[in-house]
Length: 107
Length: 113
Image (cartoon, rainbow over all chains, first blue to last red; front, side, top):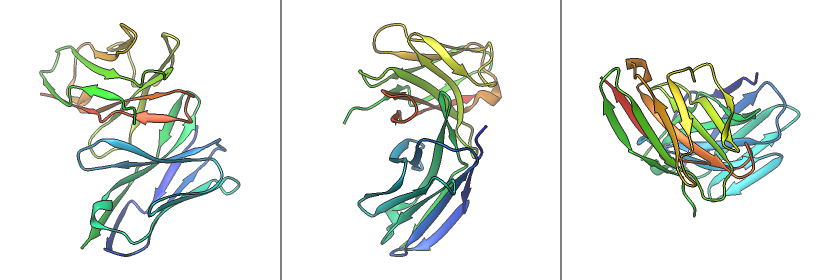
């Protein structure tokens, strides 16, 4: 059974700061998902990555398969980035979710 | 961009009542899932569905839960006799390639009173 741990659980930063959220998992995987959950509750898929790095706008996701670790970075953070960020890994016929990182960006 | 649609967005029901949560997956997807998130907790897997049958279910998915694909487009989750602890956000997801390509619906917030 794959255990997924995220850190930090809560993160508050000022607008413009560089943000890093970490995710570790216990069992080797083929790909990892980064998801965003806004206060209304809906989940949006940000990235799925299996190696290296992916970039989408100000969001960058990296993964180290050997270390079983992934990071999500946000450059030039903005208040609209405030949300819960969740990593999830495949487990047989399902995704196994981390507990999420609540990010608050203050103006 | 194709979406997974869930209805209703919010449902309030009395304890002991049956509820049906509805989902319209992306049309060419083959794998369908239900997850739930109790307030303040992590998202938990309920059930996966492929080729018109359940492919995996969690311990949460007991006899009070059932899933159905009644026609070519809908995917439903039925809770037969709701309990207070069933109050949660329920997410439907679909995938064309199994766990490596997911799209989530916006969720149904179920409140059992």
